[in-house]
Length: 42
Length: 454
Image 1 (cartoon, rainbow over the protein chains, first blue to last red):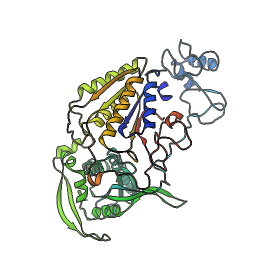
Image 2: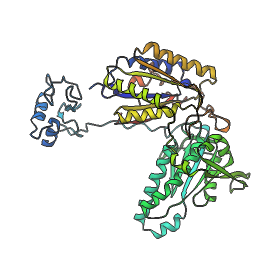
Image 3: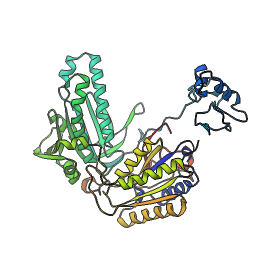
Image 4: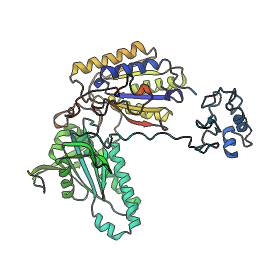
C-alpha cells in the first residue's frame, strides 16, 4: 500500500485457493484497503 | 548543478529550480507555479519530481541525483533483495525436470576463435539460452563450460514443468539461427531432458554454497545431452508422459528411440526424440495467444483506467475451471498494467503443506471472493469461466502422475507469518516475499514485477 501511494499498483495473486486462513485474511485486508488508497496519488 | 536545477525547473535559466531549492524544507516546495507541501515526491500540479532531502544530512538534492551534494552518501541506496531460495536452503526431495543445453562442436569452434571472440560468443549464447529458460519459468542452475544446466520445478513447481522444459528446448533450437547470424558463426545445440525426484537444497561449504539439485535425473539429463546430435533434443520417455496431451497441443511430438543404456545408470532408460510437430507452433512458443477473451480484457482495461484516473482502486476475482485460461488472462492484465505505467507485482500461492481437494479449493475461493465483495467497497467484478477452453501452451492444468508436486518430505509445515511476528510480512513493508517461514515451507512468493525498483 505504501508503494501504491507513489504510483498506481497492480497486485496479482495467483492460486489463492491454496492459501491458508491467515493469508486469506491478509488478502482480504488488502482488498479492503483498495477502497481507501487512490489508484493514482502524486 | 546548473544542469540539474534547469531540469527540475523545466526552464533553461534554472530559476524555478533555484526556487525549489530555496523553498524546499520550508513551508512549500515548488517546481512550477503550484506550491507543494513538504514530503511530496511529485508536484501536485504538473507531476514533475520534487527535490528530495538527504536522509542523512537534510541537504536538498535534485530528484535524479544519485549521491548527496551535502555529505556524499548514496541517495538511492536500497537493500538488494535477499537471494531466494537461500544458498543454505534445507534439503527437500521433489520432482524436478532437468535440462542440459550444450553447443555442438564447441571444442573445434573455440580452437578456431581467439579467446576474446570465444568469450563474446559464449556471453551471447548464455544470454539467449538463459532468457528462454527464464521465460518458461525455469531456473538456471549453473553454466558448465559451454553448457547450461536448467531446472524446471525447483525451487518452484508450476505443475507442468516437463512441458515447460520441452518447450524451452524447442525455443532454444529455434533461437540458434538468429544467434548464429549475430555472432557470425553457425551455432547448433544438443539438449538432454530428464525428470525425476532429486534432492534440492543449498549445497557447498562455508566458503561457497549455492542452491542446486542432486539426483539421478541430473546424471541422466547430462547423458542424454551427450548422446543427442546437433539440433536434437533427447528426453527420457517419462518426461513426455508427464507432459501428457499438453505437449501435443503445443505442437510437439515424440519419436520413441527405445531403451538405451547409459554410463553410470544402472538400468536402460526408455528415451525419445522431441521434435516440433508443426513449425508454425515454434513461433508461438512462449507467447501464448489470448483467444476469445476480448470482453474480459476490455473489462479489466476499463477497471485499470478507472483506477488510474479515479479516486480508489479495484478488486477483481478471476475464477474458473482449471485450464480455462485464468493465468493467461492474468498475464495479459500484467502486461496491460506495465503499458499503463502501473507498478505490477505478481504473487503465487504455493500448495506446500496445505490441504487438497475440490471442496477446500471451492471454499477458499468463495471466502476470498466474498471477503473482497463485502469489504472492499470498491469496484468489483467476478469473471467466471463457464466452459473449459484449450489454449495453445496455455493455462494451468491439473497435476497428474509424476508431475504432481507433492508436499516436501522435510517441509510439511505451513506458515504465512514470519517467526515471532504477529503481522504478515507484507504488512511490515516487505512486499518482495509474501512467503513465510522458509524453514517450514513457503506459502506465497513474488513471481515477477515490472517497473522501477520496489
